[in-house]
Image 1 (spheres, rainbow, N blue to C red):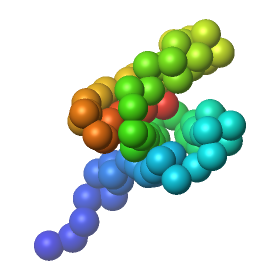
Image 2 (cartoon, rainbow, N blue to C red):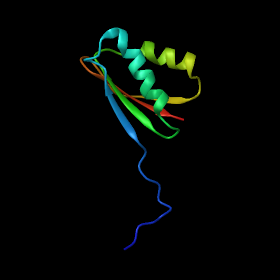
Image 3 (spheres, helix red, strand yellow):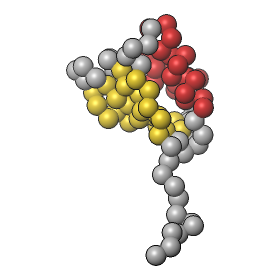
Length: 85
């Protein structure tokens, strides 16, 4: 059986655990990864608190360019999938 050349490959999903990163470096690290995503790619962010302020910052600086989906909501670990449109 041959592969279908028209079948789409799985989208790239990168993971970033910011828990060990110094607080001052967290948002720059997240934005660097987000900026490197192509349309259709995604990142999964892991943090030790709700990254709601990050979502507001993304909305302000990159409106209509991403989708935000909680995968886990604490109390110890939050995981968010951010899909680049």
